[in-house]
Length: 318
Image (cartoon, rainbow, N blue to C red; front, side, top):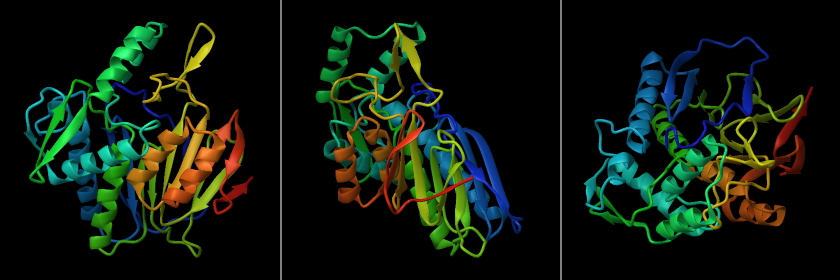
């Protein structure tokens, strides 16, 4: 996951318009190859520290570039032998693997090798050859995971696992479970602006105000939801006049997208992250079908203009 995908730069920025009560804060740089900013308005400093510890551990387990002191994606990618992993990673992989089946032409956790190929070539101002892409696509088609005894997993095939499109969201789901166990309902966890978990703000309406960077003077107001964003703003490569992104199609192996920014509001942070990536290559009819199927709300942006807005998303201007 790290170094493989250009970090998603700030597409959303948080706006505070009123004096806040006491905040308990925790901050770390480098988790999931981005920053994590935690604020709670209930509980105590121990709670924010424990939330950060949850994310630190899960970030290590899902990192597919650095060999850490824990069994995780990096070690799974090294071998086709069974690896014992944590329950959190086991359940994340099972969920992500199912989404790879359900959203197969738009989402896959087996894009690691192909993404590395694109990253390497684009850094040289080149693109992969069609033969190289087809070789990697064949690896993806022939790769799967076996799940054993609720704690062991082994990779079958040679394509590398990459959880970059879902790891932050799943980590936020782990945080939400923790917060619920502590009866904390007022909080905000910002994981690199691309995944923002909102509880309630300690104001009369309880809503947070979030600026959409790719639109002028436009804000989302929301609470008790995750705001997931995929975007090519400030993350594109141009080779021979063609714009390429960090988002790869599992179907074609290409690095071009239909949409510029896709924002998903959802109750499930992991699902929201996976869908925001998938929507980048979908047509509007497909996007509206996804909304109905998964009960999510979307905002689609093209050329810094709203292409589609779910009517339940509250936008304010100014």
